[in-house]
Image (cartoon, rainbow, N blue to C red; front, side, top):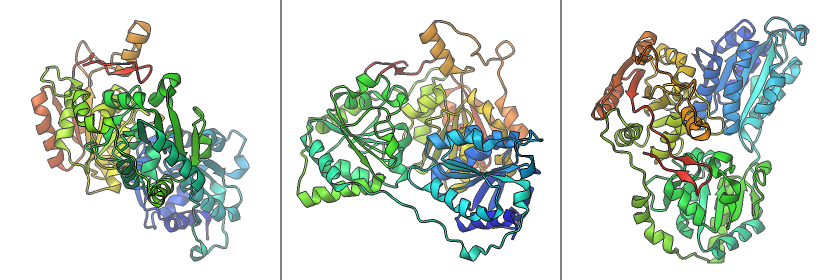
Length: 556
């Protein structure tokens, strides 16, 4: 069997149903067999978009997809997508074509060392130069992508290797078993003792809770121990926003006033599946003062990376939470609710940011108010980077996991649109909505052609203030100047995203009045096709943020 066919048959055996990519001469042997397979292929319009689509497919469904590209610049275009997936712990397989093995290292046409380029930003990368090694390396690639902290794995396939023949029977191929680390029970008992001894403990749920499928168990634990629940940005939707114990996000950007208050006043933080990164913690001294920390994470190197916790537990999040619940039951211990639980309903009213404004130009907050009012709990939202992404994190509500999928650690402009396409393909019964700024949409707007090509009915909501607005705000408050951030063109007119959408084959409309937003959302839903809504908003609205969780400047 030719290696190109071996690759495709193994993808099928590993459960791959969808691939996103762009064919080219150095990967065409794989495409020959891909066309005869059960794997549905979608043509991206940029290789980065293919990776983001595969990423969004996984985030919204828990099922892996494949991204495929040819060699040279096609392979290097994968880099941003791979970095985005890696830092947010999203598994996928990236296949790149390569020049023949005889041309490696000779600066031949489109012969780039993509393995060396990608190694720092993937879980693993291999250039497959020995035909008989391909099956075992692919098995290892899938194991690595799924096991422990998930992530992308890149496989680089030289052209002559793809066309080589080996003795291979797909019926003999058995996917690798995945090792799931279990917690040390002594440490579980120690964690329980620390929680029971604390006066104002809090649970901090990270994205690892969703990846482990542990959101229900985490909610049960919080309810049993009467712990206020804070979600990191990557965990948005892990528990319903209206759960009595949910207090929102904490952090210096997407964090909310109540989440930051609860975290600041806590004396113990039970962190599960989180990384304690800078946009969450801000000033680390302010963040950690007066608190003890229990950190549960599947990846050993994450524990102690930012600061040394009082107790670190290496474990799958679900297994650790189940162990805590089991030991609590076995020990017959309970924790009585502290004063915070009684006053939480009033605090939620007091510390909720305003989103309803009647202003014209439209206040950006009003856009998110209408989004919250219109869409159902199963709608999938994507977000990338910038003020629009931060507003989205601050204002948008979520009730279910895998329904809000942002580029978290990378903050990738352009992620939104292709990720929404991948999410919609994975969840055809759900609406998929990309929420993006007028700067961010231009990074990957060509993927609207992919949506139109395959008639994938996503909605793109552009919150359009004619600025690189996060950079404008940074320049304004950090350096007291403004330069090169204005995206307004031709003496006050602006990029016509409606015409751009129509040029790709989508529908679109522009909104100037807040009362017209809801009807536009309804028209987009009813159209059942790719639809762009360009909402013209107030230009210089600032976004609440700060340097520490105790120093967030509030703006309206």
